[in-house]
Image (cartoon, rainbow, N blue to C red; front, side, top):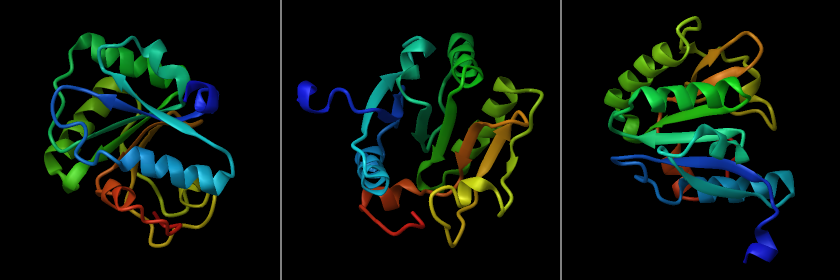
Length: 172
């Protein structure tokens, strides 16, 4: 398996943490399959540990953190997440089940990670909604930007339930 698929680029890392990190166990595999088909190139995904150093997460430009409960993060975890984002990575947080508890956690996390940049709603004309093809209806997304690029992207809406169902419509 390694010889057949080991050299394909890693589309996304899914962060394994204490608590409910796999509410939708097929979300990233199915999203990766969809992206592979759309980009006409094989892609991989992987699970990474919160206890790993941030440099281990750099196999992919995206670190996906999903849950419906707040994570318990220590100062080292915060530092790892900040270093990942400041060195070119994008932290993509996802509120499973439209959890307001997780939304509140992400708001506080964004303040800790990037105190100079606010977490705010992305405007409907943001390029994320039209990078590969137009998305309609546009799901509400929030982001933290340093003025050049997104550092953190948050979905308060449970998009992963659609990925889990292998929904292949472009809007998903």
